Length: 200
Image 1 (cartoon, rainbow, N blue to C red):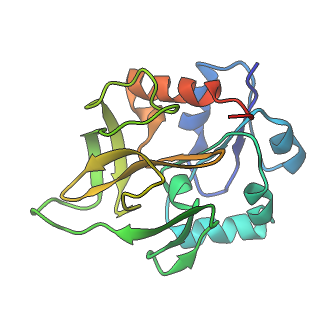
Image 2: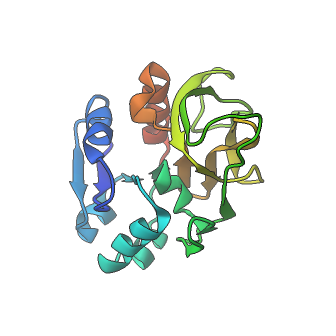
């Protein structure tokens, strides 16, 4: 049975994420207790706001090396996904260094407003996070910075430029969009995450 630990980063509206997991899982806890997190079958790293503030919180809670050492499936959501990379252009902040990528400011091309906010399509989907998710499915985004497309990309989206809607390295997964605000598609993606075992 899945046990989900949502890391209390101190910089995220965790209620909606917690409720989304509680709809599909009976054992969900919001915590920064390292023993509870270590014992969970699945871990979620949420985040809103700036990369600098989030990394500052993780540093003050002494969670940087701890998160890097986790071996069970970990899912970063929105800013939480960006924190998995080496660094962010947002005030040139060093991040967790798990995924070999750098977060860049989105370009204001084709007169599209920033932040990128609203529903957009997913393309080039890869297993296991996107099992049973049709290409072209819509999910909900809110962001002004993005991870470029690379070997680590599990799904793409396009907003005047192609970017990684999802990334992965080993047991670490990230989604730039908000699955907790993305209806049935988002719920299926969360179920797919819970179906990933610690052995992969």
